[in-house]
Length: 462
Image (cartoon, rainbow, N blue to C red; front, side):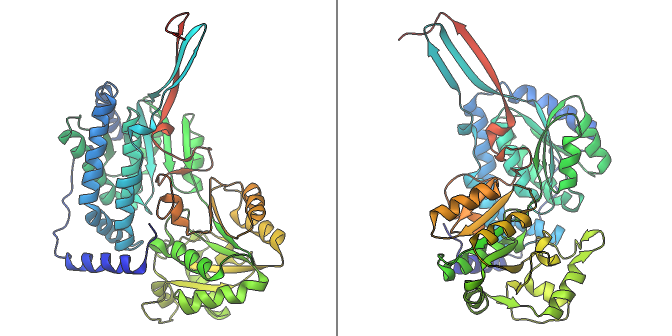
């Protein structure tokens, strides 16, 4: 269902009413001082998990779902408190989404080929112990959705979380193990270390027990995984453009784009990062964004100050990632009311606040002389990440042309970006979107390997 402003306000009110909840305890199930110890424990647990029936695995996953629903607020508050990124109401929604829409054992299917020469089955089996690297932007969400899919496939998992979100990640790992134990499964189905570092990550990526690594993060971590000599699932960067042409419902496009861009302060990698609009409708689009959708139109001077604040010679200013529009504007001395949720302006595609993936509610608009020009600019802005893109148009031929040109794992048409994750759109949810290695939206089957079982000249009863 679409995320309405009233829904967010209801959640905010509920959160504020419960602010006296005690801080979440620091769980210790699956947490080790040494990475080698963590992997050994996961190996031991995997010997049990691989022999569990699908029904038994599903009981564990169902209990993870239940606990995620119950502790969505705690996990959301922990994530915001620890990282300073995003906002609590939207993170609550994300955890409920994980609980409801991440596939379980139903995603593991068998193919059968029957003929005169017998019966052949293609069955999906576990890799064993999977190594996973998780980000600080969606820490507990990624741990939970990865764990459910990996356990469904008969695996266990060792996480090397981003150090900036270690408390939240440990809490999620503990939740997974408690859910397993309560459902009759083993402890240590998910493991991690108390102090993740580049060194612990290196141990994990080169340990002989780890044959598959799933990395959710920036381009650097994905490159490291793909250079490890192991099979890698790489969920890397994106800079998703939203194209708007003159056939679109401009008012709806403005609402959808701003809603998607501002969800959790633009932390989701699929979120709209810039707009490419046909120049004849730019003024109309900007009107709705500013007057109806809470966008602040930044002057040239304010744009320059923002660029100097959020970008450094080494890249993004991490103190700005995932912050609200109000907070970002305050950093440059501009005070705005609470209803301002996005910063916008008109600029060329090379503008630093447009060309760079910011993960902040800053949404530049690039004018295009016609649709072909819009497609060309959008492809350039996506930088070949093949991750996500969006379009608002009623012309099916144009949508098709854009889809072929942009060639992304996700393309959302006439809706907000979060529809790709199951909010107001069909399909399942994941926070590991492997555009670079080709899996796309990962699910339980992504963490399995095909095995062919052949019976010759028998079991064909046609």
